[in-house]
Amino acid sequence: MQPLIFDNRFIRELPGDPIQDNYTRQVSDCLWSSVQPTPVKNPQLLAYSADVAQMLGLNATSMQTPELIHTLGGNAVLAGMVTYATRYGGHQFGNWAGQLGDGRAIYLGELLHAEQRFELQLKGAGETPYSRRADGRAVLRSSLREFLCSEAMHYLGAPTTRALSLVTTGDGVVRDMFYDGNQQIEPGAIVCRVAPSFTRFGHFELLASRNELGLLAQLVRFTIDRDFADWRAQSGLDMSSQPLSEAVISAWFSEICRRTAVMVAHWMRVGFVHGVMNTDNMSILGLTIDYGPYGWVDNFDPGWTPNTTDAQGRRYCFGRQPDIARWNLERLADALATLLPNSQGLAVGLTHYDQVYGASLTTSLSHKFGWDAWQEADGELVNRVFELMTRAEVDMTLFFNLLAEIDIHAPQLDLLKPAFYLEKSLDQYRAAFTSWLTDYATRIKASTLTPSARLTHMAAANPIYVLRNYMAQEAIDLATQGDMSRLHTLLNLLQQPYTLQAGMDEFRQKRPDWARQKAGCSMLSCSS
Ligand code: AMP
Ligand code: MG
Image (cartoon, rainbow, N blue to C red):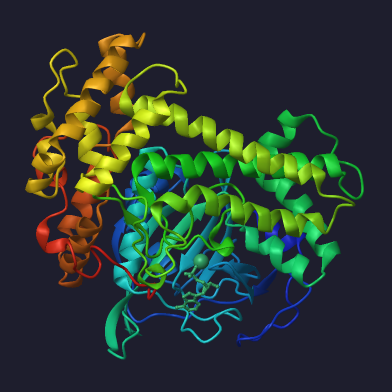
């Protein structure tokens, strides 16, 4: 295997924990703690992303070398790698939770390849000073879900962290999946995650809350310098002043707001529900991060949450994601405000969020429905059908796929039938849907798009294949029995989510009845 090149700026330029011993504790005045992954019994590579491997300068042969597999399982480190966990806090379910940190994700350093920089992390590699009362491990089901979904999101065009590999450890991990006293031993696994930066809102929040303002200023400067290099070059702002000027910090915050808005607009377009939008799970780069009890909307429902812990409050349900992202940005603004004489500049960033989110949403809705530039009256048309779809239980993905097939000059509601979960709904809501379809056809006829341009827009905005919860669960059930075929089929399939693929019809069906109330398919716990 060719040697990989590491350049570990985070630990070189930012202060580390003077304590070397690995025990759970409160850590202060630093950003990272040195920690080694805990070795595992028998690391086996279940799957890897060829695309991510290539991005890192690895190939099919290097992915099979025992040296690399041991590294991806936490049993070895390659030359140049450094291993550490970082210190962050966060607001969880609306409340400040204090120090959290990488409780089971261990960094392997910063890999340089093709003029790009990537942080690598092993998720589930053992305890760190930030593990609190947990074991530092991850189970196969949640690891497979993160591995597959982060790759799927990338191919859908949504900004996300990536996944290089999925490794089983050969060790058992004890989990009480539904927190009901029913403990089970599950297979342990480790995902190697990859992103230009895994820095979270919570990194900044913790420093502000502990009044470590010198360190906060240092982290802001470091992050702008390393993670926002392109933006820095384009912005034309002077970054040399000590401390950074209010103008720089505010403009940078606006950029974070912009990226976050774009990310959430993609989630809403494809029907992704993150499930735990705590501020420690918000990436400073606007990447989808920390795939836990996430889910995909089957029947369109803004109130739906996949997370059983959130079933009561529904704080993180599908329809609230744009507001919650803004709330999270407000918490980041609170942290950054500790560096500034006043926070007016930060308020501009939040307004920017509203504008970018609004514009991204209307553009993506125009594409999804297949009409030209958004007009004010379109809001009524969209709200009306979304409300109908919610009440009648209509599948989001199938609905938009089928809508493209409607003959605008003779619209037939029955063409949409495969998207209805309840047969009786089609009749119950026939009049309302038919009248909507007539108005929709009128809108399309008034649109300046040619029929083929309309279909091109729709095809690019409406995925055919998404990682429905039951699909991931079937892959998990098979993988648990040692059969990786479904995992590999899905990994391939989801690389081209907008292209109809031969022999793959079973993956463009609505959620089967058996999955309606099954654990892992309709509801997920945070246990992972
Ligand atoms: P999450 O809800 O997965 O975003 O995790 C919230 C916090 O709990 C983070 O600080 C995680 O590192 C930590 N955490 C979650 N699961 C574990 C685990 N099995 N062992 C140690 N820390 C964990
Ligand atoms: Mg997390």
